[in-house]
Amino acid sequence: MNDKKLFNDGFINLGKNFLNVSEIDNLIIQSKNLMKEAINNKDNLSNINISNNDFNDESIGSGGFALKRVDQHNSQISKILVKIFENTKINNLLEKYLGKNFKIHHVGIRKSSKNDKGLGLHQDGPGQMNLTILLDDNLNIYGSTVFLKNTHLIDARLDEIKLLTPPLFLKLYKFCLSYIRGHRGDICLFFNRTWHGRYPSNREESKHLILIGLHPEGTIYGSEFDDWYDDYYLEGLGNCAFRNRIDHKIGTIKVNDQVVRIQDSPSEKISLKLENPKKNNIENFSFVNLFYVMTAILIVYPARWIKKSKAIRFFFT
Ligand SMILES: [Fe+2]
Image 1 (cartoon, protein in one colour):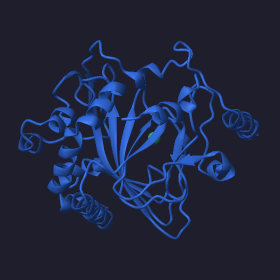
Image 2 (cartoon, rainbow, N blue to C red; image 1 turned 60 degrees about the vertical axis):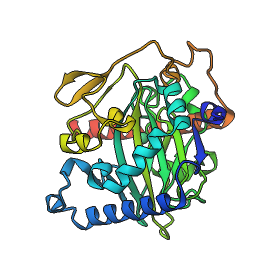
Image 3 (cartoon, helix red, strand yellow; image 1 turned 180 degrees about the vertical axis):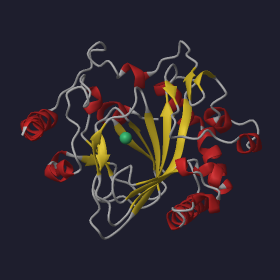
Image 4 (cartoon, rainbow, N blue to C red; image 1 turned 45 degrees about the horizontal axis):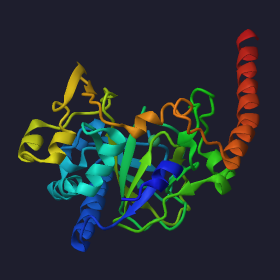
């Protein structure tokens, strides 16, 4: 599988050769119905056997919805995911980037509604990657995950240089941003180190996708805001590659009740190597990225200083 684009840009569309037409249609129907049901019952999720931790309303940005552990909530979605993670090409590619013991944490559906205000550019945990399945055609930027191409190769992290920005900046820098263009059923991959966010909706259409959070060997995952998969679901899956990836008790060392560390091995983990671009001599700073960083600093730093001095004045008067 040609993964050059993933390595260079920080994201890739692998296409739709991994599922047949009826599997794609079914995945889309089941996922959209499940999300609709969760939104309709968001004030009383226990009615539909969904835990409050599984549903994120607003926390991923106003107008965005995320539902986790969707495979446990729907057996047909689960069967399709078992097939994807049994695919040798996908498995080999993921093992190359994350190590042979990599784990799946979240399997979620994300909906960008017509009122989606977007989510500012950010990065996630070290070495983390995302496998996404498009549930709607993605032929424009609105409501899409957007990237500043090849920023995974920049040594500094956004939080280190204090450049986390609100979604408004996405509109300002629209011409700098890229998104994964593709059709329903396409499977895509990206590094969560690539500076990424979600572009606001154009108020005309909503967009759904499946987001699968992947963690490399040697790193930790889990949090107080996430529930582990239930044993009845894991046992029902039997002995398959997907179960070994999602069961937090397999191939991990317990850190505490909510966090585990993935067992390490000598295998190569490209996604973790990217956490130290300078050391690996692959630093890459394009003119678009340089323009973004310089101008964003010129806006963000003084704005933060004005806000701070106003607060200080308020405090002393
Ligand atoms: Fe993210």
